[in-house]
Amino acid sequence: PEEYPWDPIPEFPEGFAWGLGTAAYQIEGAYNEGGRGASIWDTFTGANTVGMPGAVCKKAPCPVNSVIAVKGATGNVANNHYHMYKNDVRAMKSMGLKWYRFSVAWPRIVPTGTFADGVNQEGVQFYHNLIDELIAAGVTPIITMYHWDLPQGLMHLDFETPNEPCNGGKEGWYECTMGADGKPKPNGLSSNIVKEFTNFAEFLLKEYGSKVKLWATFNEAYTFTYLASGYGKAPSAQPYMDMAIWPYVAGHNVILAHLSAVMKFREFQKSGVLSAEHKIFITNNQDWREPFSDSKQDIAAALYQVETQLGWFCDPIYGVDGVFDYPYSMTSTFPYMPSFTEEEKELLKQNRPDFFGLNHYGTSFIKVVEGKSVVVHGDLVQGKSSWLFRAAWGYRKLLNWIKNRYGQELEIWGTEAGWSDGAHTSLESKEDSGRLTYYYTYILEMHNAIYKDGVNMKGFMAWSLMDNFEWEMGYSERFGCLFVDLHFGEDPNAPTTESPIYNAYSGKLDGLCTECDDPGIKPGYAEA
Ligand code: PNW
Image (tube, rainbow, N blue to C red):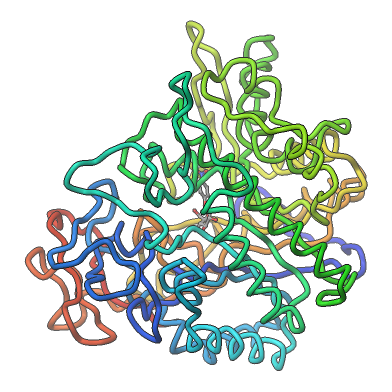
């Protein structure tokens, strides 16, 4: 279908890693089983977390964050992967999958988030079982340490009197101290959040390092700091925070937590806990921003967008011409930009990750109208997601941008790319031409980037293995390479506006959603 001749994909370099990805909260379910603690996503979706370690909700009804777009949808059950992982791995094996990127749920391993409170052996064992199953099926695991499900115990929300951070409490990624100049200052490498993430990372490396060689610290720092602060992409201390301040406080803490985990990794490589074959990276995300015209304004505005998203995290982590710091476009124009100490910059330089992890989905055109950047999409084809416009050439341009900025020797691993379509209730309507066109064209352009432009790309993990809980969009957007039969509305006890969060797995109503006026897709459970 569509405009391509569908000739066979040309050969890729030997050993090129082809794989699929998922994230814990999007597939696992079993949110209140096996000793798991509460995460910020349980709170965000309105799950009943009463009695769970680290929960903010002490008695039902628990508060629901009003910015979630598909009311009533939760990851309480999701793909039930926690119980069905053997099935899922069997599916991977039958597809001939060789690489699989997944994340570990921090609150499943450290229920309160505070390491000194103890580790949950049942959770630890679950990931051993999963990894063993993968390896037995010939699938190489890649672990993402953090894919947005912060233990709630590390972020004490106050729903009654919403307040902005910097008040000395447990503030998750927003931890800071108010400076005398009225600007919040992150607390540096010794902050509580950095220490707890490092404890968690250290534990993971010791526990699973003998089985897993590839490790990512974070998934999409931009999304869970910037989008989380203002657009409800993920929960923050309150739905709409001051966007000039808080994303940058959170981002700073994330970069230092990443640095601290890499330092631990290198230390373990020196002491022999890990080997030289172990590799560590971070995954950041960028959709391509193409100048709408060749006017200087449009070109500058498009570049500014890439620098202030991808550059924000990657300039300090990978360095530009030997300088490991925020882009000048940010430090010179953002009033609340935190700064790194000289010592931190030196540590960033000495602890550069082994790979560049890249999540990339689509492209937008940037046009300056009356001094403001406007996003337009011309005739690009749109997926189900509001932000997703297909343009494989944008992928090639972005890969070149990364090569030119961070150096040709740095290996790039595509850690996500994918296409969403809408809700289907039966397999009959699944033709999948949008997804096939997406992958076919993106893979061709990736091939061009490698063979024509000299981009040093080593792997490509498509998103996602299967349809799953698409964050604030619930189950209304499907990114799966495997179609999932969502058992919505077929059950006589399926949710109504009065019975908001029906847990089809346990057969119980286990949440209280106060705003289920427009459930869109009914909450329920999914089975791959
Ligand atoms: C990624 N944007 O998020 C995440 O890593 C996945 O967990 C998620 O399921 C997937 O992409 C699809 O959304 C994104 O605003 C966050 O362009 C933000 C954007 C794109 C992807």
